[in-house]
Length: 83
Image (cartoon, rainbow, N blue to C red):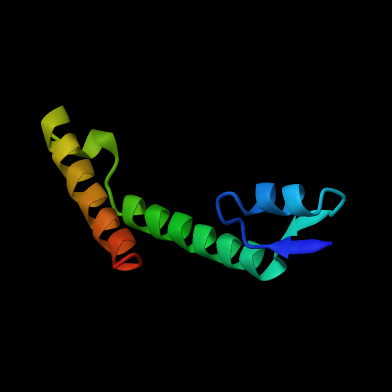
């Protein structure tokens, strides 16, 4: 049994060197991915939840501007995790 962290090519290498080895993704990596994904989705919904309904905008252009600003805000917060 080999626990791996999903690095590119790692599974193929294990398979080549140890062909009968069962592989699984490390539990810690699975939990981290779940938590990070959950936080990202919740953050996205929190920001989008602040956008009024389409009927509250006086034009489609006003709605587009609001969505643009929300996406920029999401991008800033998302990018902070990668810098």
